[in-house]
Every structure is written in C-alpha cells, then in structure tokens.
Length: 353
Ligand code: DAH
Image (cartoon, rainbow, N blue to C red; front, top):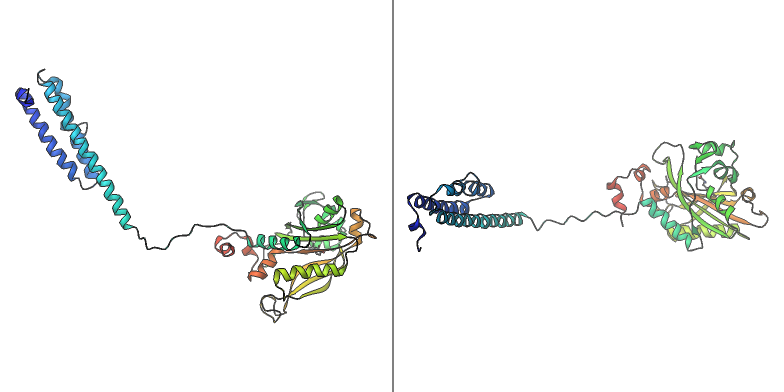
C-alpha cells in the first residue's frame, strides 16, 4: 500500500480529506494566534473534546474495518501536528511576553535600598554610657523590674511614710510589691550579695504613675552607678564623673555639682554639664542657662550600708542615677520624649547607623 487514501473506500476517503483540511486550517489558526486567548480558542476548536478531530476519531469504530487503520493513523498524525503547533506557539507567546516585560522596565530608576533595622537611640546611649564606665572598671548588671518596698525604698533610707516614697508615684503589683520606680534598688541587691570592691552600672526600665508628656513617660530607662570600697572619696567620685562627661559629651565640656538631696546619698548633688549645643552660651536646649542637668549623685549614705550589712566605718562609696532618654534628647535635640517611645519608623530611621 503506497497510498493510504487509495486504500480507503468512499467514506474513508472523505474523512481523510477532512483530516487534511483540519490540519492545514488548525496549524494556521494556532500559528497565527496573536495572544494566549486566541491560542486557547484555536486549541479548543481543533484539539478540544468537542472539536471536529475528536468527533472523527470517536467515529472511526463505525467505519468499514478496512478503512479504520488508515483513518486512525491519519487522525493521530494530524493530532500530533496540531499539538506541536500549539506548543511552539505557546512558547513563542511566552517569550514575547517576557521580552515586552523586560523592555517595559526602566533600568535607569534608582534602586530601592533594603530596609535596615537599628538600635534604638536610647539603647545606643545606654550602651555608650556603660562602655565608657567599663573603661574605669564598672561591670554592667541588671536587677528585677518587679521589686519589693524594702529594696525600692526602705533599704535606700526612704521610709515608706517619707514624701520621697509618695513622690515616686508608684505602681503597686501587690501588698509590698511594686514596679521599681528607679534602678537604685539594684544597689542594695548587689551589696547584699557581694563584698566590696563594687563598681557597677545598672541600666533598666523604671515605672512611675506619670502621664506621657514632653518630658515624662510612665516607663523609662535609668542607668544607676555604684562604686564602693575602702577609701573611696569625693575626689574619686568627681573624677569618675568628669571622665564620663568628657568621653560622652566632649573634652571641653565642663561639669558643675549643685548641692541637692537624696535619702540614699550624703552629701548629694545634681550634676550639670555645660550645654553641649551652645557650649554654655545659652540656647533653647539649655533654656538659656548654659547648663544641662544630667544626673543625681552623691556619696552613699551610711544608712544604706547598714541596711545591706556593710560596715559604714570601713567602706565609703558614691552613686549616681541618670535618664538615658533625656540624654538622647539632649544629644539629638529631640523636643518631645514621646517621640522616643512611639515606635514611629520615620522618626527612628534617622538613628540607624
Ligand atoms: N534614684 C534617683 C531617681 O530616680 C536618681 C539617683 C539620684 C540615683 C542620686 C542615685 C543617686 O544613685 O545617687 O530620681
């Protein structure tokens, strides 16, 4: 059999002609499809389950037996050819789409930098302060935020009926248990557990029943400092503070100790630095005074040593407490403390380094 159609009867020949027509029309329709939608329409028409090719294939069984193999083979070849045409057009259309997309990209646009997180400006100040003190032998330690009245007040020579205890506007958790109002209780905890010499800095959160305002937050960081040993005197105290101030604010910064009162220190002082913004000339940061208060401090009161079981005849020491949020505000000229606690990325981004 050199000629398949020659072998077919009338009905078979008719089908072979239809199959040839389906092939040429189908291949043309598939190859000329202008987009995916047209390609899909052509596929349904020529290769779909209710298309002419499928109908012919389904009817092969009804043909005279001698026609079945010829028509069957031809139907298969047409189907294969149509599938090839569909596949190659599909690939072509995909290639064209990718090319169009690539061409529509503007490669001259500036890149968008990946967003980077960073350390919070208050944490940056805490780390810097603790690092400076570590250079002169202070270790960084922590204490609990939930504290007892004993450590928060009594051991620090603040009687519970003393106005200082009221002044702190304490959040109570339970009878005698509170959220610490300052980091000073860690002084007593460390002294109870260790013999001198002691040199520690204690960063951490403190809580007071204050509403948020430009210079207050109900939860805020403090850094406590404590140095105790035999023979620690006011000169060592001043030189430690000067060392810190020069390192942190700059060598030309001057310090000023103003007499003050804290129940746990005697004598007590408030430490001012010459305004790092105007160098003491007077500006909005220092409210034209030329000075900025940065900490409370003093020589440890013997009553505190007694409370923790130290011999006040043998040991002396100094302590200080400062607010790193306030210091961050001074350093970065931040006008409102609430900015530091709101978590607004547009604000915080400025301090990523
Ligand atoms: N605890 C004080 C406060 O929260 C700050 C302070 C003042 C701490 C003097 C000290 C100090 O260690 O000596 O206001």
